[in-house]
Length: 450
Image 1 (cartoon, rainbow, N blue to C red):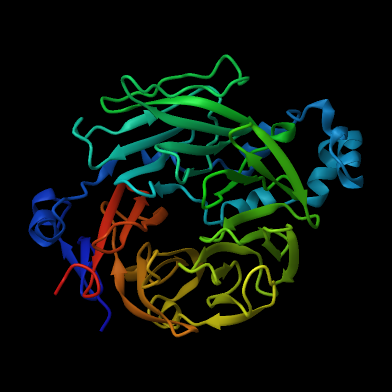
Image 2 (image 1 turned 90 degrees about the horizontal axis):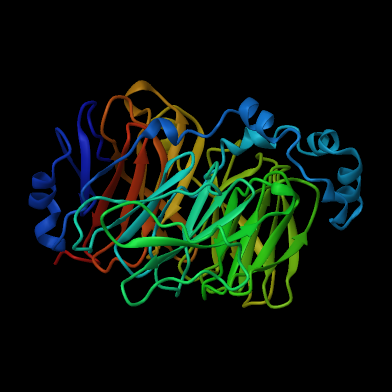
């Protein structure tokens, strides 16, 4: 029987398919429940949730109006040239409602460092919080703000690069790096002189070391690092092209397929493949050896969530008009693009919750736990996160474990993500609308327990 948290309770963790609840958030309760097993407790981080809500489409459109520079015509292709001549009207003709649909996309608003117990999340429309659970500097998070960092949409830690964080915002990408006494972070040579802003907080300081400027001051709404950390892919719902940045050089190369604005991108864990989806219902599988692509189209709306399996041989996809996930399986080794799309049923989303659709998905690095949030639902199930036990043999199957309830009155998950390198098992971190970022250890027999 799936675990169900009663209204008024809060979830603490999972222990062997049982989701443990308490009456309220408490480090003492967490210590008694899982702290003795893991040797640490993940305290909830409070933040001002009213600032995390994305601006309304009307506000976003008003902010954009008249902000596009006159050098649009430098962009290649007929559509780009016409945009430069006619300005916003043509852009709105091709992407009339992408800004509305962006609110439905699973934007990556919380990110764990790949090798350390450091979490970063969007804590306001223009700011990011960073909390180091291993640090000795106290419990106060570090706050990253800068005049360049406006309308933050996505963030992601850079792999294999110490403590370096990319933040997608209006007009480009902020690159922050931790700075230590005797080992100060350095601004990229040739970068603008207004960089170098120091973060606020009592712990490790972060320096804004670079700002990668997007074409035409576009709002960056998608990011994905290559697994080796050399390249960063970025895209905007305002554009049909994405950019591959050589971050060390500060140089970006645009790549275009189709006309629709881009909803999301995901580099595979092995780096062999790259996934890019558009708001017009199309999506593309790329092999990164020669950057050849294979187009796909959907009859179930646009892709609003995607997550790779640990081996990079399959990707799970959530569509805007479906209660069933899709799984794309590659039939051959890289760089082959031969693949099959198969359904992954989550029947309880309909039968138990009465939901109207899937909102967000996250898959942990072991491939054993899947987190799913959903639209609406009957009153007792509204605002919960469903947790599934998943198997790949080789097709994906999912068994419902139960539901996670956040703190506060009528909480809803704003963003969530797994820490994939925690040795004792998956850690699921959730930013709730009630103003807390909570971390839930999912402990089961193949990890910590005998």
